[in-house]
Length: 246
Image (cartoon, rainbow, N blue to C red):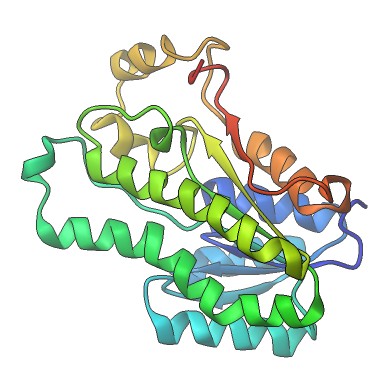
């Protein structure tokens, strides 16, 4: 029960890494708001963990504001925010990515961090405590050709994490990031371009430990970084990548 008595919002909590984090947080004693643009998926996870489902588009100010107010009103206070919701564009030359797709990637992966900070950091500052975890990617550390604007959005998230950590430390708020390698999530096919045995094998050959990351891998690290065990850890971009970035 490493998160006993804690409250948390996990965006993108209806599937993939987010669902894994929600499940582990609940097992560890936290009350969790499963926030997702797909309300059906959010409800399924929330019912499983006895949490709260909330429909949110993290790229929209009004939607994030509603999520923040609902969480504080329901829980009374918020201890943990996990910015997990994210999307990518399909692999292609950088100049071929449509403008609308570029805008959407940056809005979901980058602007969302600004919006959740805008609506929840004042609450954490007032309480003098809080843990924010941004789910970035190895793409922000070791970029791959063909995913240029996705890479850039995750690099932005890593820099934002470190900046937030320095600025919010005096207020007692810690901010960290996780950088997973591609995993068994709904985004895998988009990263690969096409999910085939050949493409999987080619990508796995770049990971020294020889496997994709899993929701459980992310949940293990997230639990540590959001718990009091990590009370001296802030500004970290932890690689959950089986050695890929070495």
